[in-house]
Length: 73
Image 1: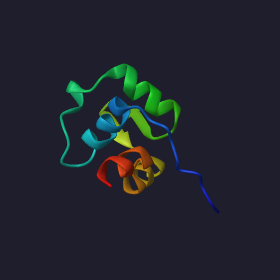
Image 2: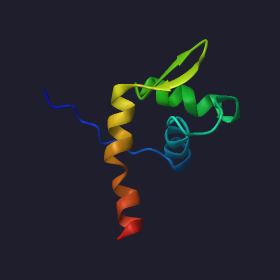
Image 3: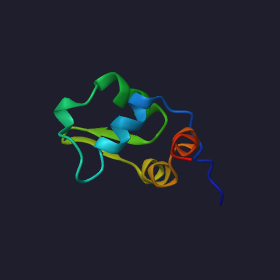
Image 4: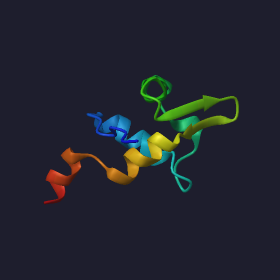
């Protein structure tokens, strides 16, 4: 099965995804509106204990943003 994990995320959305990594920022400091956007894209799951990356969200993080690749080149 092939899953399309290319997303045109905003810088704030990328920052939030990065913050949800295990060594990331505390969930209380994250923008709830952006978390809800990422939840709608199935990249983040929201629960009573906090937001968490989904397997799809982890795959997007590993692949990264093509826009960020251009900045690094």
